[in-house]
Amino acid sequence: MDKALQLRAKVPGFDPLWLWEGDRRGLSYDLRIRIEEEEAKEATGELVRREG
Image 1 (cartoon, one colour):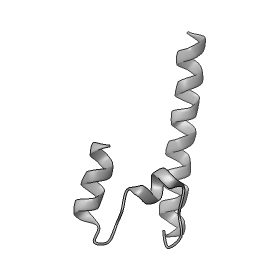
Image 2 (spheres, helix red, strand yellow):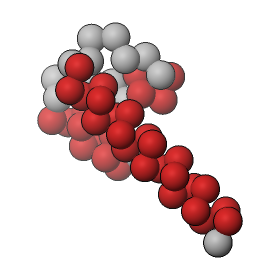
Image 3 (tube, helix red, strand yellow):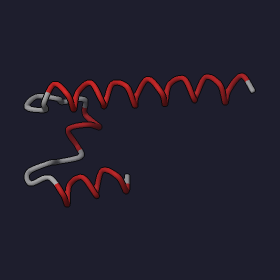
Image 4 (cartoon, one colour):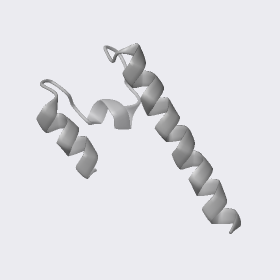
């Protein structure tokens, strides 16, 4: 949550609720790709923690 609030402070008009609700309208292609990559890393990390 802290990172979302930091983004909100740096990016005018940014609302972290967009990400929590899955609304990616208006986000740049680059930002959407970076978000998807981070989500994939988190999902992989969750699987490793559960198996370990």
